[in-house]
Amino acid sequence: MKKGHIYTAVFMIILSAVLTFALALAYESFKPAIKGHKELAEQRAILYALDLDNGLTDDQVAVVTSDLIAEITLGEKMVPAHVKDDKVVAYAVPFTGSGLWGSILGYLGVTADLSETTGIVFTSQNETPGLGGRIEEEQFKGQFRGVPIGPDTELKYVKNGGEIDAVTGATQTSDAVLRMLNAALRQDVFGGEVQE
View 1 (spheres, helix red, strand yellow):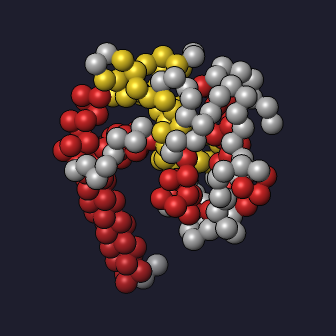
View 2 (tube, helix red, strand yellow):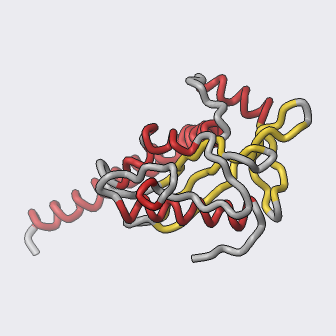
């Protein structure tokens, strides 16, 4: 092997080691900030599902969460709940399921008397931007505020006689969201069996 090739190989190994160390150092130094942002995003999502996030600043989100949100048992699960004057006002029921391209996670808010929804929010989704990804837009999510529910309720789209408009061009994602929400209502809110 020529001297030039050895120099190049050694240089690349040293450069790779230095850059790997720098990247690891940067990752470790930003870890607390990343964790804080994830916690804030989760708190904001819960407040949105419970219809409590009306343009709150980050500091206000933390205060409202500590003052009004508690973990409460609903059925057999511990769920975040809006508690005021020692009374539950609403529950934020977590839901998860498969969309077209991956898992969809979020919260479905329901009133304490389990008579209507307070909202939905998606905390993670990998749907196609501009199509299925539009489930995160207010135009879609806003339809889930104040929807009457009960033990026999099945959320439906307008084309099937319901009150909710699906996302145009994203039939599979829209159907997946309704399946998840209906499963959460049946199993987690009303304690019944999930029907496929």
